[in-house]
Amino acid sequence: MELKDKKVVVFGAGISGVGSCGLLVKEGADVTLYDGNTKLDSDKLKSQLGKEGNVKVVLGEFPEELIASLELLVMSPGVPTDLPIVLKIKEMGIPVWGEIELAYVCGKGEILGITGTNGKTTTTSLLGEIMKNAFESVFVVGNIGTPYTTAAAETKEDSVIVAELSSFQLESIHTFRPKISAVLNITPDHLNRHHTMEAYIQAKMDITKNQTKEDTCVLNYEDEITRKMAEKVPASVLFFSSAHKLEQGIYLEDGNIIYKPKKETAGEVICNVGELQILGVHNYENVMAAAAMAASYGVPLEIIRETVKAFKGVEHRIEFVAEKNGVTYYNDSKGTNPDAAIKGIQAMVRPTILIGGGYDKQSDFHDWIRSFDGKVRYLVLIGATKEQIQKEAEECGFTDCILKDTFEEAMDTCVELARPGDAVLLSPACASWGMFPNYEVRGEEYKKYVNALK
Image (cartoon, rainbow, N blue to C red; front, side, top):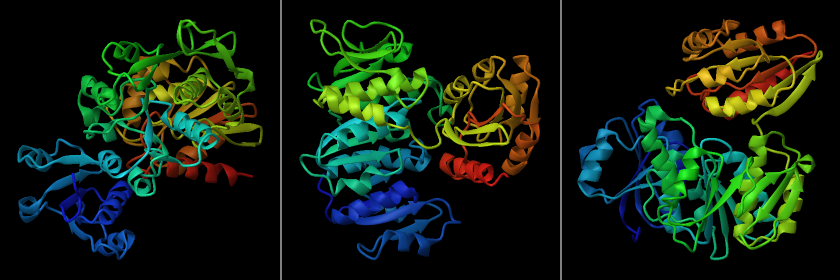
């Protein structure tokens, strides 16, 4: 679609919406930024958008006159695609794109796209480092913090774009086609948005829908859902496995990560897990996924090898903060669902005071609580889910729950309860919304509190 002079509405005034407006202005479109939240500051938004392009800002009810002249609706990922106004616009035959589709249409270069319930940020960060060590023009974008739309205009034909992609972003793509894709794992998440597990799985699988056999899809052999995906995806499949020796793919054997691109070739050791600076089987899987994607793209194994050994992980993911008075403090604020939080508790080697709870995404917490395996001395709960988690904990036979109204009260309680030799772990199994704007702010507040302890 030629965007010049097209009347486009961007739905959602967050960082992605502002990025979409900026890209559309560069393409010469007639842009309106819309958000239903009347409490937003229109002047502040206009200052964020800059003086160029004269973007109009509309807050509150969606005006009928906007629909009458609308030629394209661009959705921010935080806005549900099944809102009545969005469904009405679709029924009228007006194209509805997500920000990822917009960036892809406007950008250049080849895409390496990563999705999955957990591990996306670590895998994307590592793959980005590998690619930066192999190519000159590399952009790391998407759900990792930098909107793809803000980078698209700078991309060139020889650019490599490494993109972390959420289910929210993938449910509104049309022509988006990564050269290499990966689905790391799938466990229940965001069911308040997708409503059914089947719809959530389909959104993740859509990363492959425009791929062909000339492209590659990297899948987790140990995840039953992603293993079955191999029967349906149109791309050539390469598996990674932490528990099985594969005839073809990348796998963990005797502590070595081994890459075997074809059945008839011999496997080559990438590294031993003892040489890595990130811990846990889930992180070994992230390393395998990133290495498989890079190798499939043609990156020399020596570059992959040196990069994975040097990689120190990502902030807010089982991040060591400090040791105070014999107590170690870990920030796993990115544990925003039960499956991710299970990885956090599995990494603990000390008796643990655990902080959980937050926004209600209609998750089930039983498996998370069962994973405590005697490690958790107390579970300090906050947020909208605290009563639900306490109820499910009692159903699992865990009764050492303490409910608090504020994050600071929870931290005070943890400090009081922790003994020398204990760990205090922020790994909430819930999103941060309602108490914090995002998991990063939650993690920063945790670190600020810990670092201020005497």
